[in-house]
Length: 155
View (tube, rainbow, N blue to C red):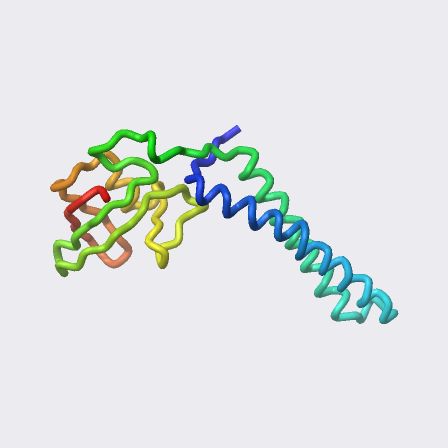
């Protein structure tokens, strides 16, 4: 079985979503199916079909989250070596073309959210910065062309 890397925060978010699906979403949808079924003719009952589609989504997501939780490899980032970029590290990069600085945290693929400053260790930038030290330059091929960064700091 493949282990899936997570920070403690990412793992807890998965557990919270799973609990919400099981205790809130699933029961609400069961009631919606019952109400729609009471309207009669199911072959032309849009509410019933929508609720059944929602049920399929919920069950699929419950199974997916259960799999990820059961196969999670929770990495305690406090115990990881310092001095070089590793999973869970927060880094400060400078774009050498624009001078702009940006902070990211390297996380597992299931936790990545670029808007929240969380990039996957399996992304092109994530792969490029792993093992780097402050002062190192990083070059990646992005869809928009070559990008060059300097690792300013491991925060």
